[in-house]
Image (cartoon, rainbow, N blue to C red; front, side):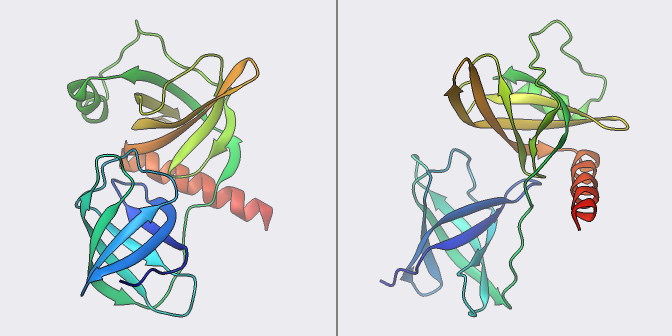
Length: 208
């Protein structure tokens, strides 16, 4: 069994890629085992992933065939190899008008994405300060109360129109009197993705 040095695994889950760091080892011909530095809280079985080993070797496209319940190990098989290319969404700061509502209902999440008329006006929405850390993958902000890790939320982003997403809390850490919260977008409408991509490109252009 051969263990590689630290690698990056770009997991193509849902609409927003998930960039992971960890180690990769061979288990058999065309089969691999990836151990992420931080256990995964998201089910990525049946997703594809791209591996970057940080050297001149060709990159591999892999298919995730198994994931341990604790998210500490992924089993993968090789789909193809291709010339090395290293891409990930940058993380920037900008005005992001975001409202979020914790939910545990699968049907509510499905309706939220599919039906633009569906609202939850009578619930306790989270309204963070609009200037926050963001990427196409997710956002990070400070909030006055705890939102436990793995909580799923209905998310509304305000641009020229409203965009909808489903997010999961991937970090919730106490910071003095507030909580530092990070969300990962598990689902998002195409229009919402394009809005964040366009915002990223405009900010990058401004910094050049």
